[in-house]
Length: 524
Image (cartoon, rainbow, N blue to C red):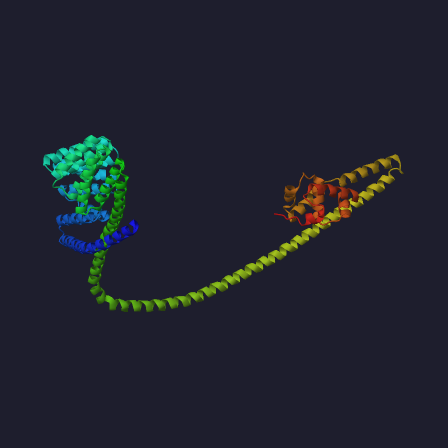
């Protein structure tokens, strides 16, 4: 039931507020239009003083509806005019400090307030000096530099007292009370809040309500619950009268806390519920205010744009026909030029394409001829290498046969013949062992298969001997075991044994053929 009632109340609040907001928007919009027109006239007349003052008015207007970005823009516009540093300059710097304090940009707030303070001291402007000190004190309090904050606020208080500015005195006393509250020195805080309350009789309602809330909260913290309730209820009634939702929420929250501290949880819960409703209404009000402010800004900008469009419409109408004529002529000329260019370009591209095709065909023919010649050369080299290998085999066989024959004859002749024959046999056998032919043969082989031996060395399980390298080369040449035996000057059985040993050093499966493996070995 509570939720249903709350929804009804919220809806009613939104409806009533939206009606009021429409009336306020109309007034605010008219005010903004008037200020914009005033600024435009000042710019037209080149009146820098009036331009500056109107910029301040516009900034104050946007500040009043919490559009801080636009407010900052117009304050900066004023500063950009580089007018004399008088009270207006100090006001602008203090306002910028206040905006940045509100936005929690404390470093910027301190910069603006410090500049305002130094200028105020230079021209002996006491009110500006008092305000700047108060702002610097607030910045220090936010940064938890409480004792520095007290120095600034006490300086501000002495200046406002000198000026007999009751509102300034009330604000500064409240600020000092807030610092002592942060320091948990509640009695001192209460004393300053009470002084602030006395001086705030003719001050704005927001200030008076805030002071009453602070007094009530201090009494709650010091367990003076009856006084806490009395002052907080005063703040609550004042907030209702002033339609100040923020202070209303604060008062309801403090009353809920006070009753909770007293152990009266039923009352605490009631005020907590009321605070929840007020919170919702404050949120709606704040959202509506933001939307309303943005709507004002949007409407003004939209109307300004409409005015600018109307002003330019006459000029546009005057030149529109000329623009259409010129544009049409330009388009036709451009199309004609584009067509002629396209036609010429197409012809040119066709010639280039034909020329490229001719070059490509010539290049392909050249590569094909080169490939044929290269294959022919390889075939010749392979044939030569094979023939050379067979020649070596034939020579070795012949020399071997001669050696055997001479060996048989050496036992049948005289001692001298035997000696000569022995020498001949030695020379023949020495020639059979000569490695020059092998070196030359391997050189030829390397020209045809340049990476064979290096690839072979990378894949073997154990290092290959020179004889095994030769055997691999001859197997790669696809020679039979008998041909290999003749070339190596060994028996076919020895070739079989050598092949078996070679298999063990290569990564072969039992079913793999050694010669097929070497013939199909992939070379990088």
